[in-house]
Image 1 (cartoon, rainbow, N blue to C red):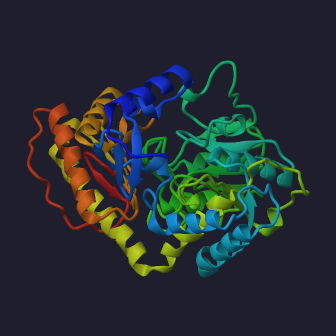
Image 2: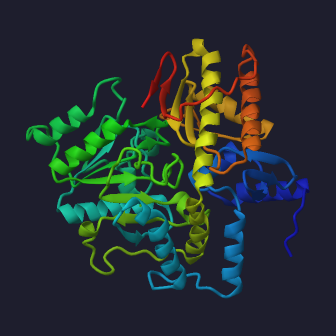
Image 3: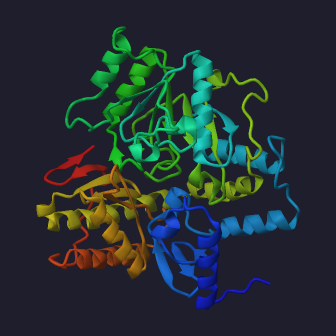
Length: 454
């Protein structure tokens, strides 16, 4: 029988086993070198009994925290009654209940009309299916992506991913992909002007694409927040040129920005939407939302052994209930205000460093300009009991992604641990406790020498 233990021998044994048998490709266990044993809410506990506050959230897969009580009970009930676990794309009660709940809770209140395709279990599977379907629907082979984009590591989605550290001369070709500058990439210049020129000039060298694929907030790319006006202009250009718009909402969807979909604020109506990570309530689930007129698949034309996880359907049903609670949505904004105010004060106190703060909702990035400095802060934060990761082209942006429902007191505690970590890495740090200034609730796209509210 499995027994919880605080024994260092268990931790040492597990560490040795992993290092001996698991591939060198592993990454996060090097960033957070502990053997974790239990987790609840926003707290992880190691085999030695040490606790950590989680500002990492499984890279955005745990928006509702670890082991949400409603999810745990639903799964226990389902398994105890021998509910179907694996079913390919056959019909099951769990799938039908998820689809109905998703329609009633998410689609109908937003007047959205989409078909749902279940892909393999992770986000890159949704991106692969979306670009494949777009090419088939438009009968074109080209796709437009953007600078600093991140869409996954399988070869199709990798071709849309900008950071060269993920590419190799032996794989990851960018064939049939054009990268254009994201909003803000060229400073104040409106980069949709370039998109329009490339689409309209028959000598631009860019074929008419089947689709434009984008993230409304670039997560792994460095927490770059596209303005509503820029997003709306991209959608208008897509409509004018008969190009499909694909929104990758894998990391910043599922409530991360304050609304269920990150594009709601901009009023977008994407042709295809990729969802994964937190849609499964902590379990593997990935899907593509498809406008009915774009659903040109033939039966069995795109398959996958695990295209639909019944346990994840059950978990997803449980967490979707949060979106029937006004207090849950209001709470996201309250926590967002806390994060914004605290981190803004940190930037103000480091004005000579010219740091930037970017984000919206419950995803914020503190750009400290250097990847080595960001790593020192992350390592120190880990020693202090806080899980935090980085992003950006050189991992120079500290990423804050607490659970959407993290208790306010624990959020404040985690922020103070972060502050202590900064004091260690930057000894000249003033050390004064930042005042939690009232927030406008508007997204900060840049806060350094100047603040820009979008």
